[in-house]
Image (cartoon, rainbow, N blue to C red):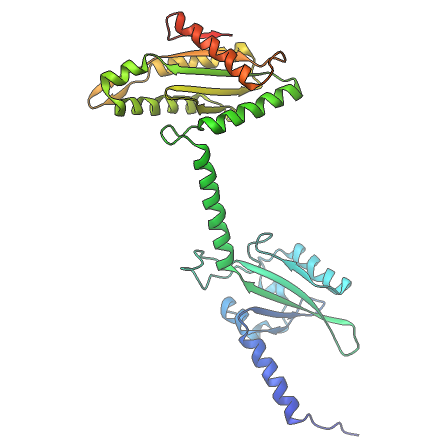
Length: 320
């Protein structure tokens, strides 16, 4: 017995559904268990340049050899076996398909950021026969978030940085010193602290002006940045006073660092309005000790050594 032809209303509904799927502003791919394309909407056609007629029946991995094959197969297989949805956000993988962004101006990205959803679909017998892979263009959302994170990082750096010298400001440097003090107390590992300031800086400013003084402060800070190790923490402690925290450093090692820095600064010539300017510094070194009550006591110990350097004629380093 011949089955009745489909009613015109059923055909109309099917046509509307297919038209809707084709005009979605998201990518839609229907895959069978062998990863072959059963459906491919116009979003995928437009962005990939691969016609629907060519994509249908092809392996997704033949169409896109650059896909993360092992990872994506594991995702698709889990949807088939667990019969539950799977997701992947742009933060895990910025993009599955290497499509150009359709919003290069507002999205501020040449490539499209994508969220991916995989949905199991069952046939008439109730078994899972296909997986629907949905591709969402989230370029604007992703780039806005990245720009916000970048702005927050910049603000965080600004809140920690001395504007003139580009070293850590006093507040953040003291926080770092306190953290190192607590780390030493826990680990019983060595660390040292150097405090130093520019000799006769008030006299220098009176003679050459504050603008020249600012240029000298920048030059001293540059010498510090060039001398410090990646683990060292340098900051501007006061007007012409600086501090350097040296983790995993004994007093004798810190004294060598202090002397190298002193010699570097003494040999630095700042060309200011055709006038060569030079300054010297005095330095105080103090190693962490369990006898210290807190980080302020550590600071006080280094400050005493700095005062002794000044008493001994300046342009020298002294150990607490």
